[in-house]
Amino acid sequence: MASMEGRRRGLPNAAVTAMVLAIAIVFFFSAAAPLASAASVEHTFVVSQTKMTRLCKETLVTVVNGQLPGPTIEVREGDSVTVHVVNRSPYNITIHWHGVKQVRNCWADGVPMVTQCPIMPNKNFTYWFNVVGQEGTLWWHSHVPGLRATLHGAFIIRPRHGAASYPFPKPHREIPVIIGDWWEKDPAEVARNMTKSIFSSYASASTVNGLVGDLFNCSGVAKEGYVLDVEPGKTYLLRIINAGLFSEFYLKIAGHKFTVVAADANYVRPFTTEVIAIAPGETVDALLIADAHPGRYYMVGLPNQAPLPDTQTPEYATRGMVQYMVSQGPCSGTEVGCRGPSADVPIVPKMPDIHDTVTSFYFHSNLTSLQHHAHLLVQQRVDQRMFVVLGLGTICKQGHKFCKRGDSDEDILVATMNNVSFLPPTSKSLLEAHYYHTGRHGMTQDLPKMPPKLYNFTDEALIPFGPKEMRLEPTYKATLVRRFQQGAVVEIVFQSTAMLQGDSNPMHLHGHDMVVLAQGLGSYDPVKDGARYNYVNPPVKNTVLVPNLGWIAIRFVANNPGVWFMHCHYEFHLSMGMAAVFIVEDGPTMDTSLPPPPVNFPTCGHDIDLMPKDFYLHTKKSET
Ligand code: C2O
Image (cartoon, rainbow, N blue to C red; front, side, top):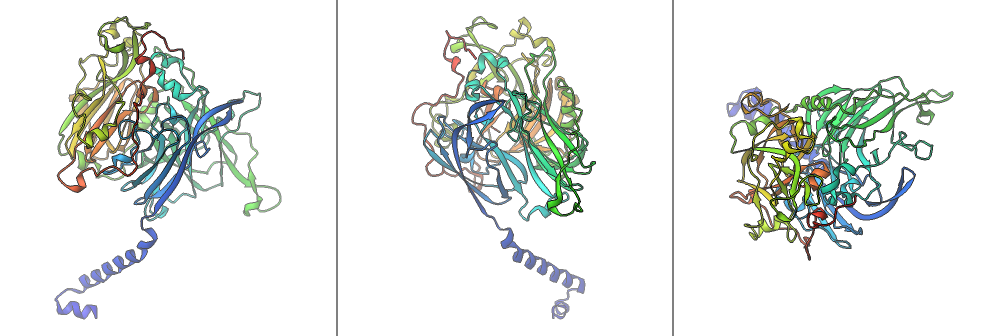
C-alpha cells in the first residue's frame, strides 16, 4: 500500500522505506516516552544539630536528616526537584545545588545575600527547580560560611532514558565517594574568624563518605572506614565529590586503575589513570573494574599542599577499602550466600608526595570533552575579556587607608580578586535588588577587569609577608559585581599568585558551565599562551582549578539571566572575600528573562552579617 502510494507520487522505493522507518521510529519513541517522561522528585531536608562520634570524641554537627553525608538526590535529566528545607538548627541556612544550572531560576540557587535571604532558625523554605541538559554527578551543600563541612550530599543525574544511554559500558553499581574533612572546632566559627588566623584553623581528620578510617586510632583501636564490597570482574561507577573545605585531594586504590568518564556533570573523553586529583567543588566520575586478584585494597584520600616557603598546616590522609567478595567454604562461590569478604592482608597504594602539586596539574590537563561541539559556542567571538588575579593580602580596618600591616591589630587578612575583597550585602539579597531595580547604585562596585598592577605574579619571594608583598597590597572591600548583556561571550584568565601563599584556586561559577581553553604554570602570557587555546575538545566545568602559581583561561556564555556567585571553592578564600557576582541581564524575550520569585521567598527581617567578625572590631584580636 505504502509503496503504491509512493509510486503514484513519484517517490522512489528507497525513500518510501525510509519514510516508513522514520514513522516506525517516531512511533517507537512516542510509545516508549511515558517510561522516560519527566518525573518530580521530592525530598524533605530537616537541618538540625546532632552529636556524632569521631576521633573518640562527641562533636556537635549540623546535618540534614541526621545523616553525614546528607541524603543523595537522584534524578533523571528532565526531572523537576522539590526540596522542603526545615531549619531546626540555630544557624541561618541556605542550600545550594552545586552545578545545577538553574536556567531562568536563579531564585533557587541558594546563596545567602546573593540570591536570597537565608532561612532563619525555625523557618522553612521549599526549593523547586528543573534539571535540564545535564548528566552526571553534582552535589548540594549549604552556602553559609563553614557549614558545608557537614551540610552536603550527592546530586546524581542519570540520562533521561536510563543507564543504558551512558556513553560507557553500563556499570554493575554506582557508588558516591564523598571526600570531606572532620572538624572538631565549629566550622561556622572558624569561617567567621578567618581574617587573622587561616594558618591555625584546620580540620582534625579527613573522611571518605563521612568516616575517618583506620589511619586514625585515638583509642588504640583503628577507626571504622568506608568499605566498598566488589564482585570479581564487575565494573563500578565511582561518583567522586570533594566536599572538603580546605584541600585538593589525591585518590588512589591499590592495585587498580580508574577510567575517568566525566567531571562536573560533563562527559569527558575516557582516560585511565592510577590517581585522581580533585579540588573542593569538583566532581569526577570514574569506572573501577574489579579485575585484580580478589583481595583487599586500600582506597586512600591524601590532601596536598604547596611546599615551602608556603606555611605548612597539618593535613591528614584518610582511607577506606575496596574488598572483594570471594567464595567461602565448600560451596561453589557463585551463589550469593556463599560469598564473604576476602581475608587477605589489605594492600596499600603508593601515594604522590603531599607536596606534589604537578600530578594535579597533569590530571586536570588530561580532561577533554567527549562531545566536540563545546567549541562552537566559544570560538566565534569574545565580547568581554577579563584578567582576574587571585591573592591574599591585608587591608586596614574600618576603611582606613594607612595602618600597621602584618602582625598587627590594625589590619585584617583578606582574599581578593584584582586586589578587591568581596563584601556581602547585609539587608537584602543582590538578586532582589537587581530584580526590583532597587539599590542599583552605591551598593555595588565593578569588579575591575584587570589588576591594578602587573608584576611577576608567581615570584615566591612574595609568599612571606614583607616589603615586596606590601607594595602590592589590596585596596578595599566592596560588593563586587560585573554586568553582562544577555548572550555575551566572556573570556576570563584567572591567575594564581604567590601573595602570602602559593595555593591553587578552584574557581566556581554558578548558573553556567565554563569551557577550559588552556592552563599553565607561571604568569600568563597573552601572546604565547593565547596561541595554544584548545578550541577542539575543551573540557566543560563548573569549577576550574587554577593551578598553584599558574593560570587558567576559560570562556562562558552569559545566557542565564540572574545574579550568579563566582568564587573560590576553598572555604577560607571564600569567607575572606575571594568572590564576585556576575549579573546577567535579561534579554528581549520571555525565555531570556528572569521570572518573578517563588512564593514564600525568605525575607531578611533584620540585617544578616556573613562577614568575619573582626572586620568591625579594631581592638580585639581573634582568639582562634
Ligand atoms: Cu559549591 Cu558557590 O558553591
